[in-house]
Length: 179
Image 1 (tube, rainbow, N blue to C red):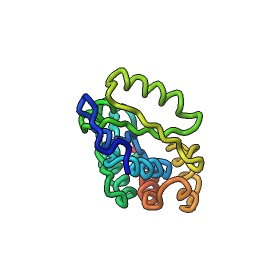
Image 2: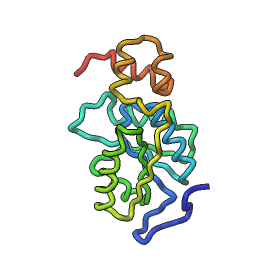
Image 3: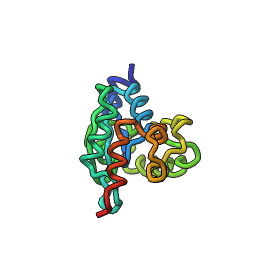
Image 4: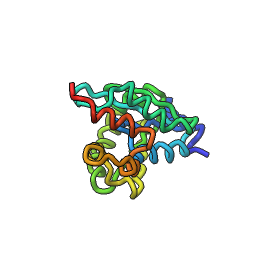
């Protein structure tokens, strides 16, 4: 069962399609947990990987698509694609009426609230649904992952934070000389 599975609003946006946007660089167990939970709430969940040319990414967009697809391939209603520009414009371009945001206690709430209010002003037809991060993943960040990977060769340590299929790619990226 999904939230408003057949509901379309006056603006023609479907509330059965939700979009979860982020950089996913790298994708973490926290991201996967939000993807799995959101996929149960909506008929279709699009994971939108944001491309920000001004931000130095560890993985390029194609690699991030592949990594997110790898860890979400057990979810038939999830698809993955990249976007650039405003997330709210991307959500509208897909005909979706819902933007999913995962939030970590304390660290994300103020920023996510500000973003939600700005998105509402840009497009009042798109709703934001917040899913609180599981306490096991509430402290996970990409900088923490990079530090653990750099300081420990034990994959079991990394597996507490990233899906196991991601570990070889993460280690290879961190071992490669910077360009």
